[in-house]
Image 1 (tube, rainbow, N blue to C red):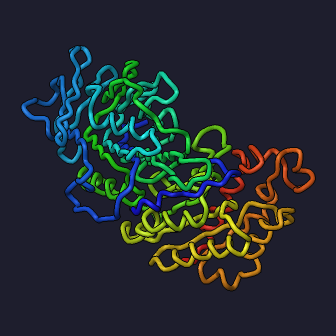
Image 2 (cartoon, helix red, strand yellow; image 1 turned 45 degrees about the vertical axis):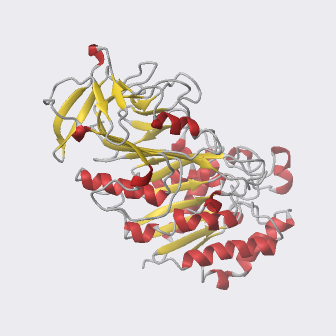
Image 3 (cartoon, rainbow, N blue to C red; image 1 turned 180 degrees about the vertical axis):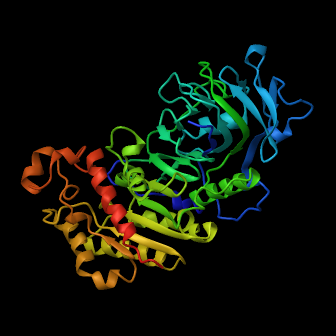
Length: 483
């Protein structure tokens, strides 16, 4: 991706069971969209590590192992205490071996290694970022079971876990349910700089993926090892996992959402599993600002708008992306879409529904804001098999902010024109619950039909408000032409 594509404009008012197969990817970077060969790891130029169970030789199945060395950079993860050795197992899935960490085992990397440098460097807004991708299977319930981590004992500790029912990264994205998945799941965490053109300075954005689909995002600073060793199957506080691990792959670069899916495709082919999106009639991409991000929701990721919409539509993890970026304008959405969204239909070989709106972050007069939105939509219309579900601002129909009301009214009064670019139109400003949002003292004055029960602050809905937004999203998707 062109570096300019990371320069996102940030405005001041919008913040930011049975055993399961799981793939975890943690990403922080970007590069050009290139289709990788089916049997080779994508994006070899920035590969820094691959812990591949197939590379372990000279060990019989069922034997303990004291080390595991990656085949790219030679990083050796070791354990000196034989009571904590993991077990090598052959012929686990599709004829490939795995390493069992059965609740009391780990292998730890040295303090100085390329993976640690990439993770810690990514906390810098000028860091180059990283991607970590893991294939594994859970073996049963375990509290905060570590797949890979440094420490969970501090607020920003790097810790990817699976507890038998949920996967996640504990400091940013806790408790993503995957117990309903039949064979395969993914988690991905992506962090990168929003760029020097963001008002108020650079920010980091993190996204977490499950089954190759982005489940949630946040502008909370990304995690760090904080000087602790990275361990597979455990971490410095000895919080052990109950998993079999097959591959851990790391890149010293960020992967865009389409690129992450190429890694997912590599994994499902390698392990003889179906792609998570294979059973869906269309892939759904939610793209927008901090309202898409779900700022203000309580009770976890499951109460954010993308996840709520997916539930209403019966979508599984890996059949949708939630790409919420606090404060993003339509101009910046236009910069990101060519690498984040447009490649999806061809790469997945299926229809993609782009569900988006932008609160009112775009600068300029209403006519300029409206034109920027149309420019974004026109460009998406040129992409084969990409369909748009577009919404107005969440401002109230009788909005006293004349500029915002004018922006919304421009969509209403240009219905014939916008139908050329929008496949399904969401009149968010006409909704009584998530319409015009003002600080609590002004709700009764400016929006008599609005109620604080639906809002977390002067801009963002709360979980109840996001439930209402999800119903509108779902209706907009269902209204798409069946073609």
